[in-house]
Image 1: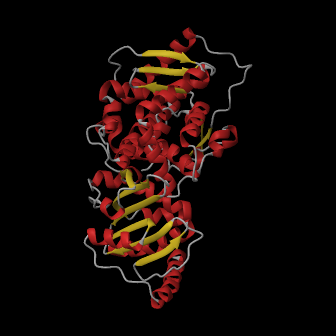
Image 2 (image 1 turned 90 degrees about the vertical axis):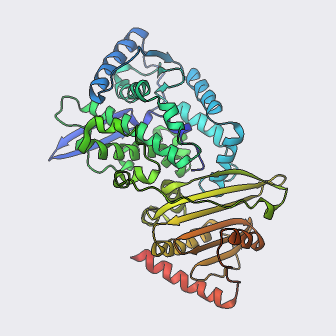
Length: 466
């Protein structure tokens, strides 16, 4: 997907800071709050108290997960300024500035963040606000914020110390990066890490109650979102960023629970030997268990169609999670969820004009059936028209939509179970790409096509009512 959510989720612990569990009427309920800014009157933790608490939590988490501590773990307290410095350093080491720029521009091109959104500085401020503790696999060190009392940090410790144990057994940083350059596959591995740490944290919390994470009902992430007014930066975040932050934790928790129920913690550890290869496998654990893999999708190189003034700045995979976010942005979650579930593979490429910084976005999708491709065509046509509110000249047939926008021509076509969108360029470039992928020529605009556009709109409305 066009944002490395590892930058978001590797350090994020505030979502799991305060969890209270109530048992009644046979139902298991959950409530969670995010961190409030530290009070200046709140006493700071001392090193001895911190170390003793961390050692006790580490021992219990080791018992829960079955992962033994192989080597002593370094544990330190950090100030807010030190944590901010870590966030900045981690962002610089994780992705080069050009890569982060490309990811931000891709997110902008898909309509996931506003234009000219300062993603880097926003993420630094957000993570500094959110972090209560973290495990650094490079330094093999566990940090915790020095302004938070140990009694309030036990759950965060349980989460992050699970990462520490996993790192000693599975080398988590190398394991996660092994999915590159496929962003969707890397996000899936990240969800395993964060979801399993969430599961361990919950089992730690429920220890002695007679319940475990396996007793969880279906998990609705919105239950865990907490009161965002306590997190000003999170409240300001575009919806995509909020969802991208939550997904590895709660999407990963749903996946982890599905693995734990039949196999226990040994089964979850076995996932490191056979990692999921797409967010679809995280969102639908049965797909992971079935061994179904996405269809390979490519976009032929079309630099020659554009000329020397254009440069390719990004190319990757969105995955089911990414396409759900795109659809949700323009159609709402109820329409987006079933449409995205038909995902069976994709690829996107982004070009930027060297002088004007204009963008051309091309995306190719493979759906799981021709029927679902037809439905996807109709619904995404609606999304594109909502994305480009200033569009005009909208001829549309049963499988081809094109219109003019202030950013350039927009083209959307499906053939069989595949679809391709090209945004920000001319009909000549689209026709060239269409030919490179071996499709027959797309129809030319005509009055009949414009009339068909109205019929297609009726079909979209009818489908959305079903």
